[in-house]
Length: 231
Image (cartoon, rainbow, N blue to C red; front, side, top):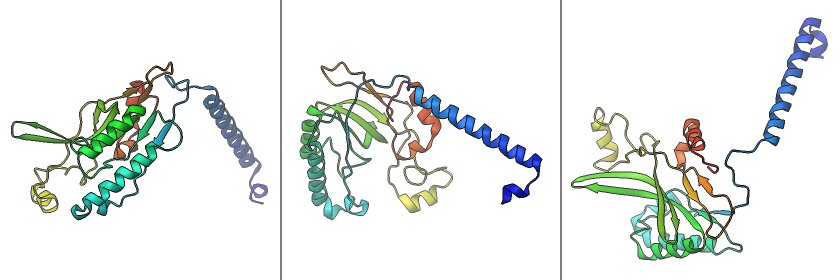
């Protein structure tokens, strides 16, 4: 009805615009269908994404630490031993409520899992130099129980991982965080590279993005230009 009431000139404009949109959409769809991402692996890799399902308030409750750690170990073990062989197992940010590399039971779990599958996990990383202490939110690529590569999160969430204008707003920062050591942003972009041992498959080149960072297209573009074929 609306189309019938407009002028002939308007009808022509609408028709031309609609035709142009169809052509552009068709061209884009065809380009995507025929294109291949540079550096994308030719062979299939399998990954297991683990969701621990632990409430944040429970994970960081000191009275529930042992219970939560036991649940985490059970769920990660269950995921790793599920039917089928996985090339890569990915854990969510800050999965463990203790340092996984200094806790014998979790370190043993990581070592056992990473014998069969590469493991991606994130946890804070404390660097000390004399009396200076620097805290990073880091992601690790682990194989055979060893940390192969490390990435320090570069784009931190304001008022959560760091306090903007900390010196200027120091009283406000102290009110909310006290003397807590906040995160420092990393300075080096990284692409993890992983290839299954004794395999002819093209290596996975993984762009480690932690939480908030996935919102920034410039970060993703930078890692793709560095050769990443997996985000």
